[in-house]
Length: 73
Image (cartoon, rainbow, N blue to C red):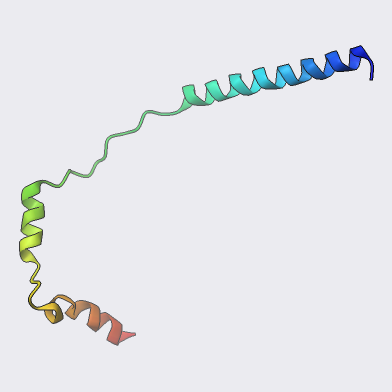
């Protein structure tokens, strides 16, 4: 290969690298800002209420709905 071929290959590689860097910067600029969630954040009081509603002593009662759904299958 001649010196001219090496120069052409180097220029093509350089243009490809510059093009990729430019393209990735453009993608970052086009990314939309994340929107805030429409769902309200659950508070500690609501979590405590949910935990209080769970009856650990009566597992059969807690899984009654699940058992009914399985029996319908």
